[in-house]
Structures are given as C-alpha cells and as structure tokens.
Image 1: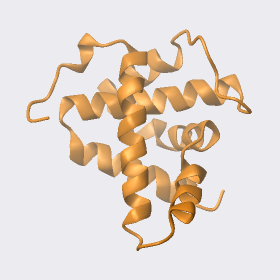
Image 2: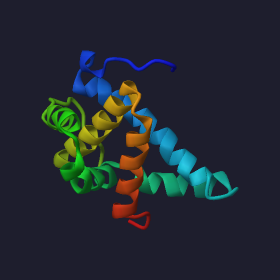
Image 3: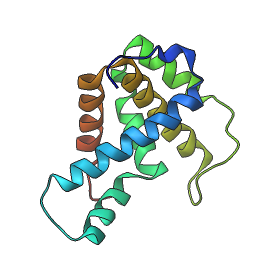
Length: 131
C-alpha cells in the first residue's frame, strides 16, 4: 500500500475492521521474531494478546497518550453501536477493544506506521505477556 488513504472516509467500525487485521499481523510477527518455535507455541503466545480483555486493558493504558485525532477516533469507535460481542468478554471490554482496533486502523490508513508500531509496543509493554 504505497499511498495513505483518508481514514475520515470510513466509519469507526470500518477502521476497527482493518485495525484488527493490522494488530493480528503485528502480533504474529512479534511472536515469530522471538525465535523459531512450534506453531502451537506461537499460537498460544498470540492468543494471550489477541482477546477483548487484553486489548481493552491496552486501550485503557494508552488512552491518555492519544493525539487529538486519535482520541476522536477512539471515542467514536468506543461509542459505536455494535451488533455482536466477543464470547466470554464484557460488552465494555469489547467496546474498548474495538476502539483500540479503530485507532490502529486509522493510523494504518493514514500511513503513520511509526506511530502505530510505537503505540502497540507501548501497550504490550504495559500490559505484559503473562496475563
């Protein structure tokens, strides 16, 4: 994707849709870069970071550091009417996780890859991998 796209053309749930995929690729890459291991171990590590409770906690810990534009995307996504919710997680966590994914989608479509990477890495450091 050579050029950035105007993320304001998309709904918060559309941003979350692409942000979910961006997060998944980053998560899997992070696990893979820690060394060659059986896929089952890679999956277990990734699963610990790819759930609504973990992502909601990340968003809560990062919320105060968002730029004005990111905070606006966060609020729109957190308040968006969703028609499903993640199994075994609270609706509040699902909304926060959706908001995180929307911010990541916004940054990705804006071409702000350094900011995207920094935000995710900071979130991972703060929440940790042993939850």
